[in-house]
Amino acid sequence: MFGEDSFFGRHKIFTGVLTVLLLLLIIGGFWLRSRMIGRHHDYELDFLIPAAEAAVTPGQIEVGVAKRSIAPDFSKYDEWVDVNGNSKYDEGVDTYTDRNGNGKFDGIWIAGFGTNRPATGMNDDPWVRAIALRNNGVTFVMVTLDSVGIFHNDFVDIRKSLDESLDIDHVMFSSTHVHETPDTMKIWSYAFRFRGLDVPVFGYAEHYMDLIQVEAKDAIEEAVGRLAPADMYCAQVEIEPEGFVNDSRDPKIMDDTMYLMRFTKPDRDDTIATVVSWGNHPETLGGKNTLITSDFPHWLREGVENGVPEPNGVEGLGGMCLYFQGMVGGLMTQLHTTVPHRDGKRKFKEDTFEKAESLGYNLAIVACNALRSPDLVWKNEAPEIHIAAKTFRAPVQGVFKYAMMLGLIHEGYYLGGTSKSELNVIRIGDVVMTAIPGEIYPEIVEGGVEAKPGRDFDIPPVEVPPLRTVMEGKARMAFIVGLANDQIGYIIPKSQWDVEPPFVYRDKSQYGEVNSGGPDVAPTIHAGAMELLNRVNGTF
Image (cartoon, rainbow, N blue to C red; front, side, top):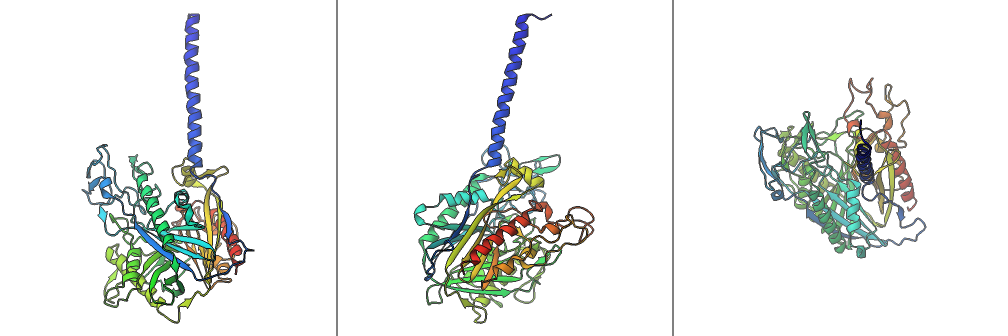
């Protein structure tokens, strides 16, 4: 029926198609592997500086600070008009100015609540702020960024870009977890709608992260260049939750303490920097706001630096204020809290700028008063610096696992279903900080992990003893820096993991697990933190 030439012709076509498909599979396999591996796949840390056996001679600590705005350039994005006023971009309804002429809306996507929330303007600039510390031959930099969260590889990029001649031993980063700044995690960047659902990731603008990295590098290097002798004073003060924060998930456990470090010029009441750490989601404006803002940390920093206006205000401390996020898992929020104005008359419950300002200024008043109280303030007489850092791999599951495998978020997936992150413990004299790469539930630190009947895993509490018992073993002040060097979501005690009925605390599952890498993340982090804390405790 068919001739020999026809047969061989068809055979050649079949072979050619098969070859092309095979090549596409090979290319696709290499592409997928590159996405899975991501940048810095072999980047590993495991050190204690100085070494445990090293002789340490603490002198006077040196301090330097710098900051840079990380406000997005609105001229690089499309301007839009929210026609139906729902704070979302609705294709075919809302209008926009197509500045680059590509036929689609390219907005600044605000992170923290739902997808598809473009920014319409700026209320106040988000910042990257750096404080450099040097003593006993160690140079250490703490960096805080107004961002919902930044992934590990993006921070490693910054570390690798720094001027090597500055001899920086380590840089610890932390995001303030602001829910009103541009998306830095690819989760909220609207790309298109599929079957009624907003699809994120593909609308992510890499150039905003480029801006952050450039400005962070500059701030770090300037802070190190400004190092000068200083005195270090510390204080911690308990804050009654009412009017400040509430715990929206059972069990009700929180760290109700604000931790403070003030650095002054030697023997002078002249502030160089104030470090404030406290745990609460900066989400006072809620999900309808379309103005870029750093939320309550903006007014907290303004109040500490420049003072809080009357009535019932306070004189500022001067210098630069740096806010480092604490423990926000569990879930620490002011969304359902009524925040009083300092005038003693007005109160704010709705999501407004007045509420954010009042919360920030109220916190600034607490901070300034505490740092002026002789009953609370103590001088860190021998502020020697010790740093322990270690890379770890945590098992991940669920939607995050597959998103990581495809390199869509948090690049860096390892065979066996693990993702890489990092833990730090820093000692500065009588102060110990444990840097946790996500939103840790306070009960893991403070104690009170529960294992109630009906839980998903029939096990006793795993994350014991509480980290605080080890953190405070030899330190006079100890606290958690959250969202540090990474953002891996909620860190939930395994015995409190509760997504299957019967539900332990309510007639339905509580919010939390949907934004967690899985039930084995918390045990991994607890074990790693214990190891580093024991290393650092050996330096006392």
